Length: 466
Image (cartoon, rainbow, N blue to C red; front, side):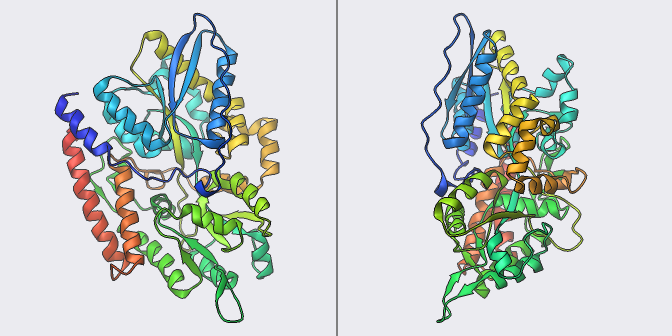
């Protein structure tokens, strides 16, 4: 990689900022004492692992590392917290020039194209094939596996995977005479629910809105996938041909934004603005809104926060809304584990040994039960601890069913792009400007955002020679 390429990649990667981690809501997050490491065996090979989940989720990562380090004495994984997904990939970008890279890195799905373009990774599929372990790929949850396959190659090992849900207050639904147990909902149904769930006082002031709204690129991607519509062309970048233009000003993209704006204008939904996920979460658990969009990985945090709030909120989940007859499914978000080409042969083997460990059914069951993410291998569902987890949290089964609604296609899988995170920023800014009256329509707002995204995408592709 020449110096010009490194410099230009550095500029573009700096634009990775302020993306939602789609984990437990920030407003509800706890800061527990970090899990202490187990002692390092004398003579073991150190494997450096960068990760970007903090709080309770970060502690479960540390527990997984401790489980691995306690299981053998040849290698020792040293987990190094990077504050966020953004910080992780930005530090990797800096390391392309300095040579300071980890042996393993947890990278969110938005970073897939950039990791491939770095030229410094070892595809997981190559290692699975070398060791005669391709059957692991066959056992992966199809929606999860598809997220990290580009051109038929599995580049990284899925680790923490989630999807978006419509959270509901079941108690409010029952009180309003609505059925909280029919997961498939249309846009029109959600609009009717929002009206029925909105409560006003004697003076006409809203004391509970039906729905909380905030701009989030991940939700836009979900809506495109549900409606079998590419958000990026060609083929969401999944067939080995680089994405050359964005398509989120599509009819379904426009409909989604207009749908939410209409409910806010009607007074049955409340707009929380950019970065409003935490505020919407807090309002939901305190009974100030009756419906809220968030990741299934937020389930345990929302249930716990609702119990602590004492507002009588009974947390349930529905599918993301859609038009009648939509034939797609939601996509998976989260992060995967990437193996770099740095270090000694022993370190690279240790990195691979650790990644293989995380793919074991018992490890995936442990991870899922303690976090709320999907197991990435289906064999994990057969284990007693996973079955007990599903019994304790039946809402999670709804999330499982949602990602299995349709056969996997490029249209209903997350796209791959060199400006994935910047595109989300463009969308969020356009969404917010439209909601604040700066654009006359959602079409106008999204057209403007797509124009910026495509200009930046062209620049990126030229930079890396795509």
